[in-house]
Length: 92
Image (cartoon, rainbow, N blue to C red; front, side, top):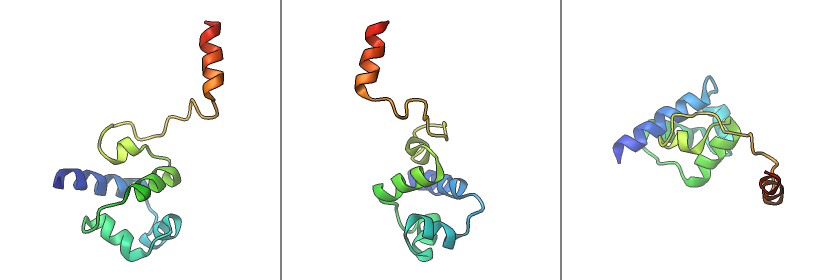
């Protein structure tokens, strides 16, 4: 399990870039102390935190968790509804 936490720590650091812990805390609605704990590995991120990091920093949840090497979120399907997809498939 330590390996997974190490991956998450490293990828969160990469996602945050040059943002200070205080800035990250404000963006994620948490204290600088909690950000420090996440980045040091003494506190595991909640699912909600992982989701917020993904949304705010534009990185894939799979990438954050070490399940994929694809960092960016694929937005090519953004705004497409199920009805639109079915209609397009029917036209094929």
